[in-house]
Length: 533
Image (cartoon, rainbow, N blue to C red):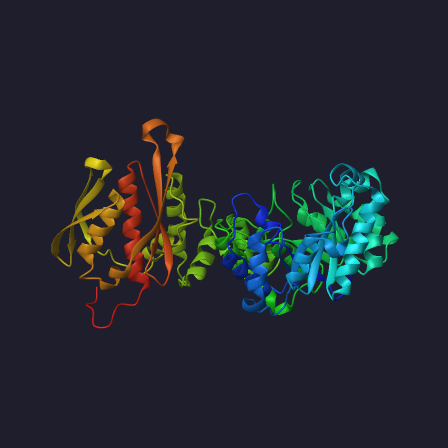
């Protein structure tokens, strides 16, 4: 295992990661992603291919004045000179200089089949292309890294040619020779074997670049590190072509916490989760809840047996302290929950359960019954907190007493659909009838109910539905299937989720909506001078 403190973490989200299907960064997005990557302490950020893509050319031009990096150096990517063309005359090589980055990463063929069939040139000319281009860029004051494309596939055909490419690059002044599993077909044991062999035959710094087509990109990268490479390449959240690339966040976390390699500054490690999610938003991709280290569920515990042990010592079921990578432990309350799960969840929600053994038992029993009927509190912390507090002395009182509600949907001409709802409630002994319109029956119900309550609870004026999810629970069969509704609600300063279940979708929505408004009153300080409930 390498002990070199000058360990390279090279991120290629803006080039290789941008090849993921459905991802298209604007120049402003690319600048924002680069700033975020710098915050996790990576050493190199590959910004794209100037000269080949106008967007990337603009990115490097703007980066010179708009990008102030604290940890990383910006890297321009490009290819070696063309076959039969003098390096000084190659416009693509000139574009690499024009990008004015301190580092250039070149891609070169290292598989004899690709040299002959794709480049349509000789093996010797390919070596000359590598040596000429590296030497030219080094003479211009650039640090040069070389990506040996298809290295592992080429090694299987001819174990010597890829080494000759590396030797040509190092002789010309390249700092790093990167072994690329371009097709992503390798397994860790084979990567380790090949890297160890190459390491014994060349003297320059070796790097590794792995695609994830076997689901082993991170494992393959770590196997290469174990075998002697000191430069790793990855992309944010594993974004990339086909199945993606090695995940930079998982790589960094493993290198630092498991292998003891100071791959990034220690103070940057707690930024991993925040940056992971921020880049996901810029890519317009929902964060992966189950992503190792940084996913919302990475340290979430569902089984009651786990919670019992965690209550004694969190280390018993966590492989590291979640705060190390900016995450947090979560206890999920489900039908699998025991008393320890409820107690730990209460602690997480800030509910004091000391001396409330009977209440805890009642909550456990109630959750098991409700979940058997289709309720789920895993993603509905607000509903669970209300259920929990209801079993404690001084729990929240109902905001109102329902007399009735009614919804209707009218389809007018020109495709206009309008929903209307009327609610009749009793608040402090006063009967209130309120009507609201909306773009659907739930939105109309929300508007009508808040209108009825806002004079008594003025903090509800700032509350709005943020998201609405429906799942049909079909195990009862046919048209009698149960509906589960999750409602996300916000007051501008926070967001919470509530759940409702019923055979009727509107009634399920009503349960979730009532919980949402009740929780809003519970969590938000009342405006000064407003009446007390």
